[in-house]
Amino acid sequence: MTSFPTLMTSFLMRSAIERRDHTAIRDDARSLTYDETYMLALAVARDLRRSGVCVGDRVVLLMSNSTGFCVSFWGVLLAGAVAVPLNPETKRDKLAWIIRDCSPRGLVVDEALFATAVDAARDSDVDVRFVTHRETGFLGTEWIPFDTEAPCDITASAVGPAAIIDRDLAAIIYTSGSTGDPKGVMLTHLNMTTAARSVSHYLGYRKSDVVFCAIPLTFDYGLHQLTMSTLVGATLYIEPGFSQPLFSLSRLVASKATVFPIVPTMVSLIEPLATRYDLTGVRCISSTAAALHAGNIDKLAVMFPNAVIFSMYGLTECHRCTYLDPAQLATRKSSVGKAIPNTRLWVVDADGHRHFHSATGELVIRGSTVMKGYWNNPSKTGEKLRLCPDTHEIVLYTGDTCRLDEEGYLYFVARADDILKVGGQKVAPSEIESVLLTHPAVSQAAVMGTDHPVHGQRPFAFVTLRDPGATDTDALICWCKERLESQAVPTRIVIVSEFIRNQNGKIDRHALRERLLETA
Picture 1 (cartoon, helix red, strand yellow):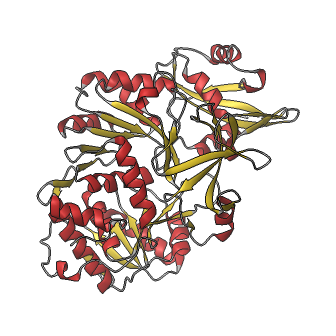
Picture 2 (cartoon, rainbow, N blue to C red):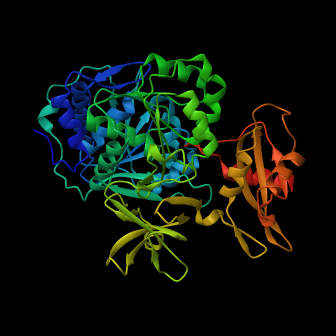
């Protein structure tokens, strides 16, 4: 018996029946069928309930990419609780802040992270019950052992999933913003099932697919690789990360992966190694987290000759909201496309008027993927979720500046906080970055503003090169002068060996701002 189709648990329960003996999840250590995954998840749900976790309680998942994470995630949902996935690299102070903010009843943690988790919980003064996903294991009065190698208690299946509805929370995903305290994005079962159905539909996920996930499962697009592959009954191959691309690409080929979700920063890591491998088995590549520049699209097309490439745009607050039809790549490489199925969007100008084409303004999203709000943060929720006077419903005001062309294709301009004010004129860092990336010697680029006594702000750029010494900063500034308006030309360009990335694989702009202060 499966649960209602707009509940996340219905995905696993249905596949456990229809794809019982098919491989559901794999990592470098183990492989689990759908039936095994479901039975283990039921055991986790049972043990969470025995420890005092009730419907609606939060359970933090502080775990690396692994089959254990996947089983634990499903177990939390089957218990009727709310999953709070956190990157395992989360530092003690931030972890304590999040525990204090969401007051979890349980915390599932990799054994290696035990000390950090316990210290953070003590700092937060929140009473948390610990569950360990262990290899060798150790027990204490507050520990419940969980091991994917252990035999599943047959009584687990008698417990069954908790009674919940699709308006209940399924997950809280904390944003990885580089400034200010993180915000907990509340996602209901309806939010997540709608997103999984919509995105897997236009990406064309199949039950025969092997989805190779090297992006963090704690990142919303990584987590949705689990939900989408489970929805269609495919196999999810879980890679621990992409810090060693040589080995990751080797496993990509060995796993016979057909689907490869990426973030744009991975392109420069793949490029120098791509010719060593036969990547023709990959049929679908999707990119998210940041704009996929035209140059990267061209590189991906060469490296993965049989793959259909999907450039997408979205926010944690609504998962994905647009995608570019691959048929449009040749003529609209700089566009992030149109609204995903079952979503509507428009831009609002400075006077609050809605526009569906030929306008620039703040992007607004309407649909069932829009978050319920920010956990424990009504003021920030009120800024983002507002009543639309035309549709008389709550919609998401993203804060992102975007442009719609005459045919309704969307072009990302900048995050609200990224827009530079240069001599009274607005300058989008993304425009400058795009120009720098067209230079044949440039591999990556990041632009931000530096204060100026006369102009207010001036653009400042950091770049990495394909080959050391391939060009110099003067040549790059000349390149920009030939292609940009004067106010958009960087005052200074600094060549760095590599960019520091945050936990979700994005360029860490907070670290760059510190570097900017050092070079001032």
